[in-house]
Structures are given as C-alpha cells and as structure tokens.
Image 1: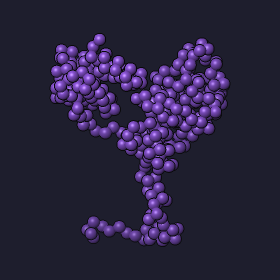
Image 2: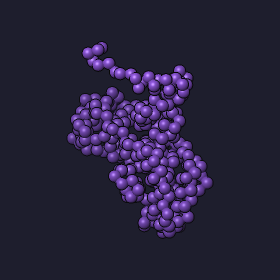
Image 3: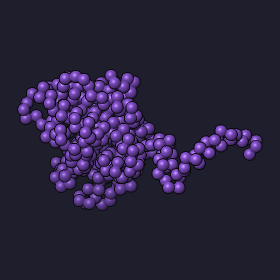
Image 4: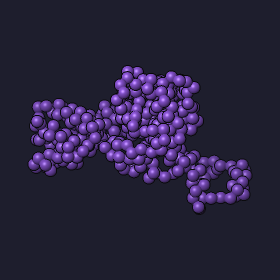
Length: 317
C-alpha cells in the first residue's frame, strides 16, 4: 500500500471523514502524484508544490474553489507525512493560492421569480411532482446538491419540521423544512411508489428506473423544470442555495444565523457568499439604526428641499 493509500485510510478510519471528502482527496492527490510521477513525493520542496498550484493548475484552468480544494488536500497530506511519517519538514505549510480575479457570485432569484418557480404544478405526473419537491427543499433548507441527493426516504416525513443532515466535510447541521416544502414532500411521497421498483430502495428521490436520482440527474431535471417557468433564466442548484441565503439575510440581517443554516465553517465564507443590494442596506440602516431614524415631517422637508436644490457646477467649486 502506498503512502497515499495509507493517508486515505487514516482519513477514513481515524479521522472519520465523509465518503465525498475521501473521494475528492483521492482524486486530487492522485492527480498530483501523476503530475510528479518521475519524482519522489517525499523529496519535493515548497517551490515544487507552489509551482504545481500556480503554474500547473493556475492560469484560469480551475475555479478558486477547486484550487482551494487542491491546496487543502496537499496541506493535509504533507502535514500527515511530517507529523506521523517522519518527514523532516512540511513543504506545504506555507502553500498559497494563486492570485485570481474574484469570480462573480451566482445570481439570486427575486421573490417574484421564486414564487413563480415554486407554484405547485396542477398534475398527477410523479416526475413533475418530484421535481417541484426538489425545488421546494432547495429553497426551504438551503441544501447543497450532494446533501439533497443523499437524502433517504426515512429522513423526511410530511411532518418533519427539521432534520439533522451530515453535510460538507462530514459536519452535521440542523436544517428546517418549511410548511410549503412539507406539503410538497407529502404530495411526492404519495406518488413515489409509482417510480419505485424495489421495495427496499432507500433513496428519497427516484429516477425513471427506480434508483436514486443522481446529482447530475437532479441538476438536469431542475434546469428543464425551471426553463418552462422562468424562460431565459439559468436556474441551477447553487442558485437556489444562494437565493435561500440572500432572502434570509435580507429579511433578518443575522449573518451568524445564515452561517449556521448554510453550514459554513467560517463566517468569512458567508460574507462572500451572500450579498445585499445597496438599496436594501440603506433602507435597513434608515429603519433600524437609532441615529438614522427620521420622523415623517423631517423626511418631507428634506424631499421638498431636494426639489429646489441645484448641484454646483465644477467651476463653481
């Protein structure tokens, strides 16, 4: 067994890492090993690892999130070699991400768009009922695609107002299921048997063959379902998670609660992930800040003054 296999076994049995994390680390580390097939991984120096991250993987080939996964895998692997396998130094300790222009955040749907999208279909078609339920759960609970795909039928019932889910990195968190999502779940579970082929199939959401609907299958079904209701809008699972976060944050202003609901380890991730438009921020400030509150008479006076105000020309300043 190679060092990489030993390390992955360590992650699985001693650290209890989730299957998805193990699969990701395996793929990334074997990609790294293949790129250095003619080198001893134990003999690589910090500049070798930095060149791999910056030159081999950088230059826009991968998203910042994927590069961060590569860095995390390398740092974890070499930390293990250093601490438990006697590697004299840790060459990945100071590994830095290559500088990249920040990618735009995914768009969020407006409340009007989400209302249109989530209107319950007037049909008995189990596929459409399933797709509508998937959309309701994405928006109600802010689930990641992998989290939703992994749900079993026993996890959620029509009366389930909350559920503990094992999310990214094997971290458990509490998710809440709104009334509309519970209604959709009850409707789906009433017709789920029409797609069921084996009585012992545990998956909540089934494909046409009666097996678990895959992540790719969910994304494709969501795209097709949304295309008929919001033409021209590229709706995808991450957009719904982002919409969930944005709407909760806009309604509450409670960033810490949004962090918990999303399952983010660091608050900084939530700050990057969510956004508020300037007008909403200004309105929230005016309404909530004690020093910003103005009575109606003052606001009317200011509005009237603005009508007579003429901005100075540059040469007047």
